[in-house]
Length: 459
Image 1 (cartoon, rainbow, N blue to C red):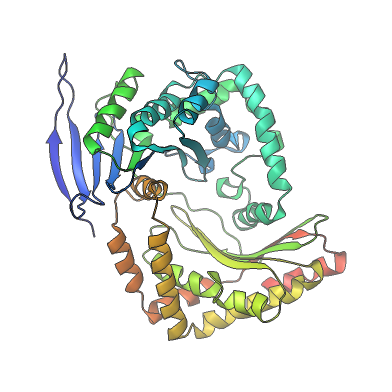
Image 2: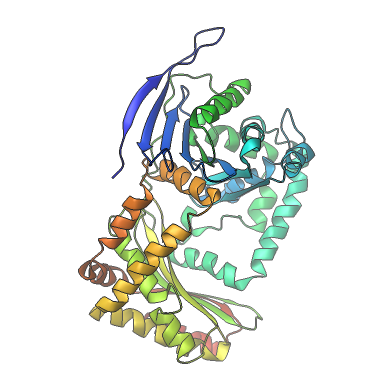
């Protein structure tokens, strides 16, 4: 796993300051790839990865809150709040926030998921102090004014409409609902028109105060940076905002989840006048902490992860029934999903579904060949490394690892875990996952007779 050492460091100023705890989680060669973590009094965690060979840095703050933490009436509040933190603080207007990063050629954005939210900025290494000050100010000093809530409501409703206009995107929300039903994992991250219209500034402020406490946050930075400088700058920004008053507070543990209701053999269809039918056929997967996830990653790659995968070859290359066909996995704290997506002409939907189901059943019963598994391992190892070639990807990796797992894994360790997957491991997880009865979600202009036959795919 990872190498680890721990030291206690104290800082002094005009008055005594509480002690921060610093650890080296991954020791890189000559400082390259070194991952360090400091936990401040007040529970704020700061993790960094050093890459001296680049001239950029990415700074992010991860919040331990996602759409899974919403009640039905608050559906969409996490994403709404993500928008509002860009609207102004006690120190900056919305224009000040955006223009500060634009003036140095930086990039700033955020995203909301079902179990976390992230705000980040990518800048030249020399401009990292500015990025730290702006993003920390947004997270600690947001005003959430009534007028901003009302203005941003329109933008969020347009975002919902934009998603609805993209059935290839919308079908994945439908599949989550098909699998999880009306619980938080089954609801859309954006919320619905009704829930967004019902959210008030007061309710969003309460949600903000509850979930953006320093104990719920992880600060992550990667690139040509100095860990101690980042810690000092972050600490100063949070102390200026009065956000580290409770020096006895400790970070919350990674989410352990609540078992979500999952069903098998369900079919949901949304009739829509589209040129294609968009389908997702899938079943329960693995939690993100399940040790079998490495074998599932290899299985997913071999089944639908590239141009040489089984599904791509059978559906597109041999028969030309779809342009886009792939498989994917989603892991949550206590459960997961495995899905196969395809977009095809409505008249071909049953042929596509039959081929996909036949392939899943065949692999569940007979497994994959050793050659397929070896090729998938090589592809997964290569894509893992190539996907970590920029500071934004590195920041994402260390921030999400701290928030979701509470530990760090080096790239070498990840590659070793992938390489250690055996054919028997892949065949075992194929039996466990693909041997389950699937569920199906479809969006498209299917006629009554076509719709009535959809249950054949999950029988």
